[in-house]
Length: 149
Image 1 (cartoon, rainbow, N blue to C red):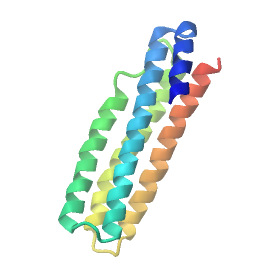
Image 2 (image 1 turned 180 degrees about the vertical axis):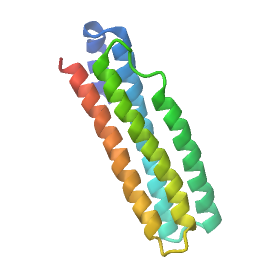
Image 3 (image 1 turned 180 degrees about the horizontal axis):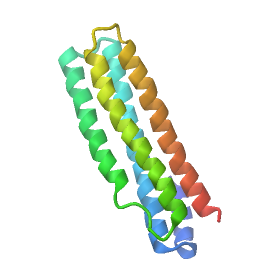
Image 4 (image 1 turned 60 degrees about the vertical axis):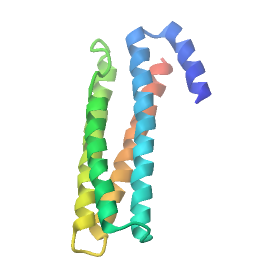
């Protein structure tokens, strides 16, 4: 993390202010996505291990939907400087991924309440993890391509 901030200080001298601000924002969003992922995995594991009640798990999965909905708003706006077409295009990809993450959180709750033996929830968790990983990877790619120019 310290390396990131050192790099950021150097970039402020080389990149337009709007680009640096955007890179700071998406780095923060990556950290938020990691925290959301941890919470989802922990709750899912507690449910699998029978360390939580159905009602507690349901409440937590409902809260994840709210968290993910807010995360969609956070990622969507304000976005990169409109003058940087490459960043605008990449940001559109982030918006698609964050919406998939949101849909996954809704499916996780549906999976919890489904009359199966956990397959639907397991499938939703797999999709959530894949989309979250793709989101974080895309952020890394954006930062890397913006700072290597």
